[in-house]
Picture (cartoon, rainbow, N blue to C red):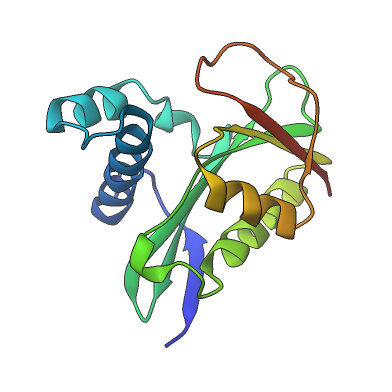
Length: 161
């Protein structure tokens, strides 16, 4: 089986289910209990995904053997067009350690370069160990905090393209 990664509308059925699974995992880890359907619905309602489509961003879905298995988003910066944000990086647990995470990052970085982006930044939490490892493996380095808008941000990374 092989991976494919391609742009997809954030509102497609597969993208919505992947975003649902993403919020289910990150919320559950944060709270130390399964997230409720209502909590996930609220997160999806206010998550700003509408900006993950041209001209303000991009959303990609990875498929392993044709099955939706991963996703990631790119958010272009309104005030600093050479900087973009990586967001909603998720690989379903059953597909981790198969190379899909690196392919997601490569697809997002390619989209960013095509939009004139020179630096991709992101924030993540301390408990998302797999994500931090993925970023470091693919050339993202920890940097000082570049915002204080998110109470969940504990680590900040950046990569020059």
